[in-house]
Every structure is written in structure tokens, then in C-alpha cells.
Image (cartoon, rainbow, N blue to C red; front, side, top):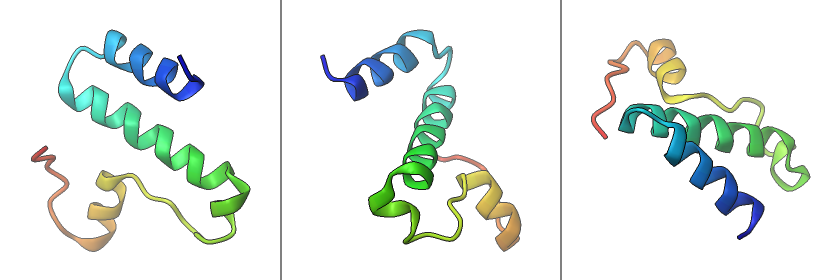
Length: 64
């Protein structure tokens, strides 16, 4: 099992809801984009959906 597969399996096993799984995934991807040298210089900011929606003045309701 790769490290990514292990992380995803752990988040699936410990998440109590689908929303929680989604939040863990968003946080994982945000961390990756902020720290992976290939991408870190490409993006000034990496937002979670709820944070981005709030800044845009739109609903942050997750519809899946």
C-alpha cells in the first residue's frame, strides 16, 4: 500500500460522515499543494471550499 493509499484508508476508516471524509480530503490536498515544490510556487493561496465560498459571498453548503 502506498503512503497515499494508507492516508486515504485511515481517513475513510476514522471518518464518521461523508462530509468528514470530504473535509479530510480537502485538507490533505491543500497541504500537498502548499508543500509539494512542483505546485507550491504556482499557487499564492489554496483554499478549502467553505473558506473560498465565504470570501466569494456564496453558500458554503456542501452538496457532495
